[in-house]
Length: 530
Image 1 (cartoon, rainbow, N blue to C red):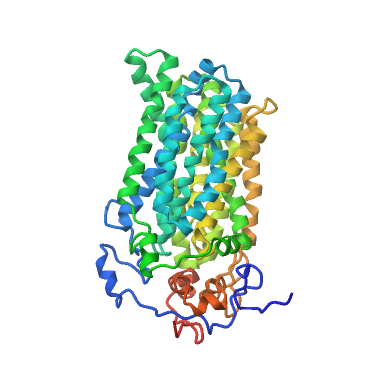
Image 2: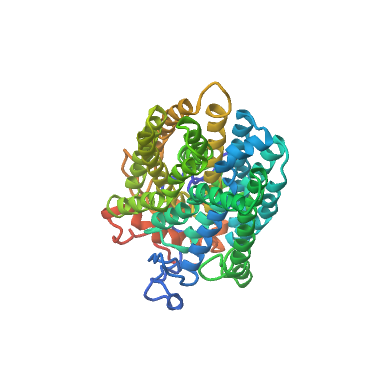
C-alpha cells in the first residue's frame, strides 16, 4: 500500500523521517522564557515548557528540586532492598544450604523481574504519570522485602529476590520524571545525578546490611536469625518513601498529569501510538543494547563482587562488604560525571559529542573489567574495580544524556525499554558467566569485559538527521521541528496535539552545538498557527 511521505504515518520516526519534510503543519504559539508570565511562579528559571534551566543540588525548590530529591531517594531505597541479600550471602547460604547455582540463579532472578516492570513503568509514566507509578510500585514491593525474613528454602530465596527486583523499575520513573522537569541543556547532569545517587544504594547496602546484621547479633540474636531481622530495615524504608512520593510528588512542572488532562493543560495520548513510535525507532534498540552492557554489568557486579573478594582473598564479611561498597558508592560522582561530560560536549560540539562520550566511557569500562578479572593481588584488584565502576557508571549517565532526545512522544516507553535492557543484559551475563562451574568468577569478569567492549560498537550507527552521528554530519536542511513533528499525523496536528513536541524541538536546538544553538530557525520551520 502506498503511503504519503512526510505526513507522520506510524513509524516515521524511523522509516522515511529524514528531517527535511515540509513544515506547514509544524506550528506553535511559542513563548520565550522572558515573556511567559507563568514562569514567574517558579523558584528556578524555566524554559517555554516550564522545565528548569538551572540545577541547584541542595535546594528543595518546588516542584523541580523537590521532585529530584524524591525521585533519587525512592530509587535508592529500591536498590538497597534488591541487593540487600548480596553482602549477607555467606551467612544466608549456610542457613539455607545454597549451592553456587542457587546463588547465581537468585542473582539472575533479582534483576530479571525488573525487565517486565520497567517495560510496564514506561507506559505508566506516559499515560498516568511518574508519581503514581513510583509510589505504587515502591509500596507494593514492601511486603516482599518483609517476607524475605520468612524464607526457608533455596526456591523461596530465589522467588523473593525475583519479586523484590520488580521495584528497580523506579529507575524509569526517576529518569522520566527528570526529563519532564529539566531542560535539555542540563538533562545529562540531572539524569546522571538522580540515577547515580539512586544506584548508590547498591553500594550503600553493602555497608548498611552487614552493619545492621552486626548490631542485631550484638543484641543477642543468632546469625541465622539476625540476617532475617535485618530485612525489616529496607522494608520500612519502602513504606516511608512510597508515602512521601504520593503526598509530595508532582508529575509535571505545571501540576499532576490527570489534573492537567481534565483542564486541557495536557493531552491524553493513545498507548498504541506511543508504543509504535518507540519500537519503530531503530535508535531505541541500539540504546537497549548499550545500556545492557553498562547498567547491566553494574547490576551483575553488585551481585557477585562481595562474595568474589570474600572467597578470592580470604577476607571477613565486613571487609569484603566495605570493598564491594566502593563499587556502588562510586555512583555518587561517576554517573553525574558521565552526564556532565555529555552536557559539556553537547554545548561545544552538539549531539555528536554525546555519542562519542558514550563510546569512550563504556569501552574503557570494559577494559578495566577485563583487568579486574586478570588481577591476582588485592590492591590491584581494588584499583581495577574502582576504575571499572567509574567508567561503567559514567557511561550510564552519558546514555541517559541522549535518551530524552530520541523521541518526545514516546519518552516513557523508550526509557522503560532502555532500563529493561539493563536488567536483561545483567540477567544474560550472570546466566552465561556466573551461574555454573564452567567459569570461576575471575574468568567471568574477564569475559564480561570483552563483551562490554564489543556491545558498545553499535553506537556508531546512531544518527540524528538534524544533528548527525559519530562519523557523519547532519543531513542537509534537517530541522528539529521536522524530526519531532514527524511523530504526529496530520489529523493529530490539526487538533494541536503536537504542540508539546514542537516546544521540545525549539528547546533542543542546543544539540546543534556551537554551530548554532543561537541561530534563527530557517523560514518555513517556525510554527505559524495553532
